[in-house]
Length: 123
View (cartoon, rainbow, N blue to C red):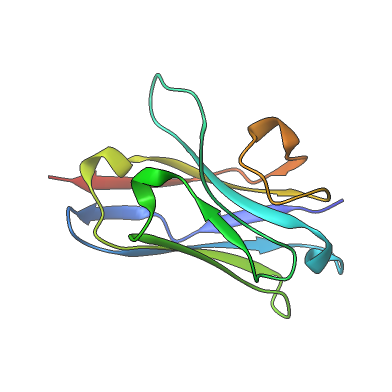
């Protein structure tokens, strides 16, 4: 089992940057594929980015490609989401998630979730 704690959210103006962090408990962090998801008010939770266990492979939602970068440091049990050129439509609660199977876009494939961190982008 793994516990996840996100941090780094906040209020930023459009065009600005934030870096989200997700710290994981346990000694098997490198066994988990990790993902970032987001949920805006009155909308379903949606995929943002995912990264493989080794960190070599990653996948992004089309709307964040070229602006967001997912990375991980297995020695620190932490996954990051660097968000640049933020837009008001990026406003949401951002969640990190973990699964033992595969780096996937599917919400239902993830077994463990953090509590979320709020990101608000003002225009």
